[in-house]
Image 1 (cartoon, one colour):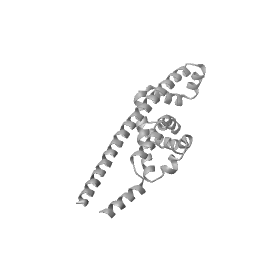
Image 2: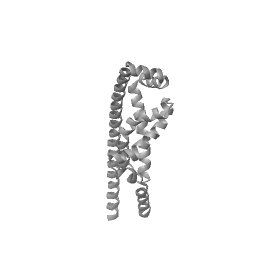
Image 3: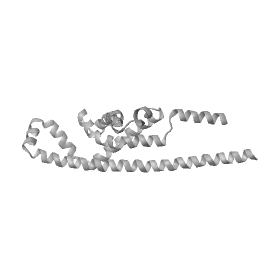
Image 4: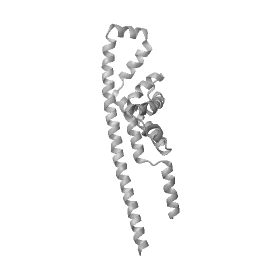
Length: 193
């Protein structure tokens, strides 16, 4: 009789852990959505402000000189600012989120986030994770948005990546186990089976 009670309590504790994980997952999805929306809004505001500054700049004598001397760079800047900046901001932030979340997941599962992210201050996190992730996002942004120059892609990827990478690493830390923990759980399960 006691083995039946033990199995029932064991099953109930597993159900509670599952419901707790589902609750954590739903909270993390909401947190991720808020992160992407906030980053998109902030980046859109920044882009619209820069667009305004660009128009003011090209109306000056120095701006006219820049247009005459560097027509290719000026054309590329004008092309980016001619796009729907809210759509560009959303797509860039979603791209940054997907790349950062993927790398955050890989780092968490293979226990790299302990060394690269978790024990660092904010400037260390930016230097060790944020800037290299920006380069990775820029690689994908070049093909997705038709940004031909590396420095342009990196510049347009910088703000969205820095806005979302910390949240992505924190979400990966909440949601996924390290491979060592996972293997220990499998080993414990096989011993009890």
